[in-house]
Amino acid sequence: MYRQVLAVLAALAAIALMSVPVASADKPIKEPAPAPEFISGSFCSDFDVLVHVLVNKENAITFSSGATIIIGQLKVELTNLETDKTVAVNISGPFFASADGRTVTLSGRSLQFGEPGDFGPGSPAILWVTSGPFVVTSDSEGNVTGFTTSGHVIDMCEVLA
Image 1: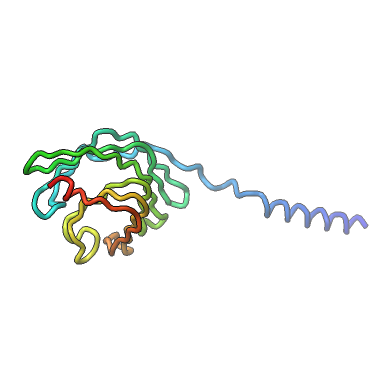
Image 2: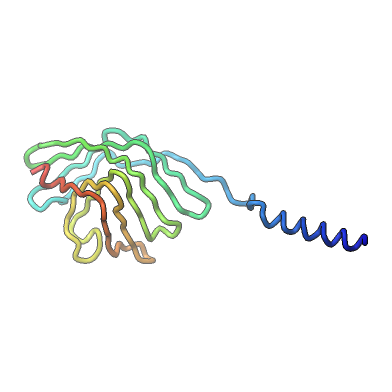
């Protein structure tokens, strides 16, 4: 009987240990998400654009798996460098990066900008404010292989023209 009680207690202890969350997972690391003060480029076919950060109160939260989310307030000013026409936009996201870094998903309101080829072979120059999923994929070497979007897109080149 003593052995049966020990066997039952051992089995119950094993079951209890299996249902307890693993405590070895590290706590997420939260730190400010730096952004360059400005970026300029040929994001529109007829003129160059300056992207200037007005407000950056974003934080990056990196999990033990390597996945990262960036949340917080980010506002930028877009300027047509030919005409000086300027538009301010709130692009506070959020931003999600997979643990392997091969998939980046921007949700909410985000700014997508790139020169020809930046979003994969043959991709056009873009300067878009998107609302909804914008997913960028990369290969194992970090080269962008393409993107998809299924949300609302505002072509900021048209707005700034």
